[in-house]
Image (tube, rainbow, N blue to C red; front, side, top):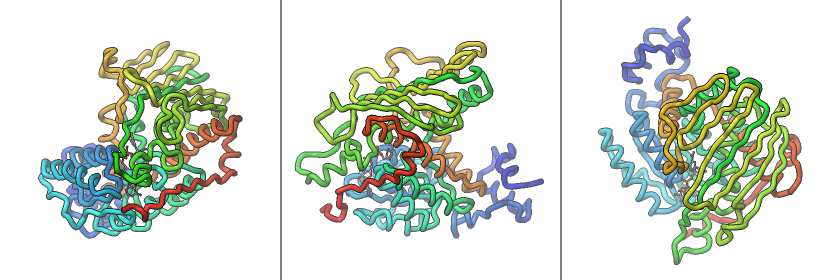
Length: 430
Ligand SMILES: NC(=O)c1ccc[n+]([C@@H]2O[C@H](COP(=O)([O-])OP(=O)(O)OC[C@H]3O[C@@H](n4cnc5c(N)ncnc54)[C@H](O)[C@@H]3O)[C@@H](O)[C@H]2O)c1
């Protein structure tokens, strides 16, 4: 039977322009394709997909670069609270658009201020990339869902329990209608996928326990002298608990999501502690966490993080099983030792290269972005909101246990219906 799934997996699609492929596949299967190009990309079915980015900072710009250079998408609109952020992103993305033969971003598609997300989602973009600080994710996702856009939402999906529940509700709304990705790019790294497949197929036997750590350096300060306290707080959102979700939820979540992925489960309970000992000059987030998660099947996972190191850093996850152990580092050293030995290419880096990058492995984000765009073009829409909410709640569970200094269960957390409200009033920004 010729279903859309069969079509999108057809190796003959490889050498053909994707839109041509979707068009010819549509004709060939006389309506058996689950979605028409019009549904995928509106009335401009035969033109290049148009991306709008809300939150023009470091991460959004780098994901946009992958959209433009690796997935055949044009950067069409930008939204941000601040003009300098818009200008910086425009300069870089205009250059990238032009390198691919696309027009630059028109001045009428630059949206500034607290309502920039509303304006951007109402414009003629096909895909919305949400790369604002985590606190705003539920609100911005809701706007993009209502505008019927396909959406790439950066992680974490929210900073509190109510936010995660909202994401889950929105997940039900988009199911089968819009494609939505959440920014856990590790799941699309070819090396990590292969490692996970091998572990799940028994390469290290029964998993007994695991160890993870995210030992990272401090983050740059972005506020400049002369900025109001309100503006400084937004610029330095990563140091604010309510805007960021704290380090375990904002940064370490990549490893917690990865544990959930490998174990195909979410934690049942956690014991945790955290402190603020070195980076005390700014904000109210912790600078280190220590957690012990308990997963189904009595699998215990110790996870530790720091965010103040200098000169050395490492991010790693290690699973111990009855037939060996599997280990993966952000620097690309990914392997299995024991009965079924395996080493991912490229070979392990030298000691000087032990520095975690924003993108763990260089192909992870491009692979994810390509899979997302293909899901739209093929009509096999992805919906990662439930999984994104589950990983965010898993991180929130560890954070709350550390704040409250006691063991906490998943059920207790979810029932708590915890809600955080910022004192930041965006309308007061001048
Ligand atoms: N997947 C990854 O590996 C990865 C890496 C880094 C960051 N992130 C995530 O990406 C998101 C952005 O992080 P970043 O490092 O790019 O931060 P950033 O500070 O560099 O960029 C955020 C941008 O959003 C703008 N902004 C803030 N509030 C806004 C609002 N209400 N409306 C419109 N614009 C607003 C800011 O002015 C800024 O330009 C966060 O969720 C972060 O956790 C993901």
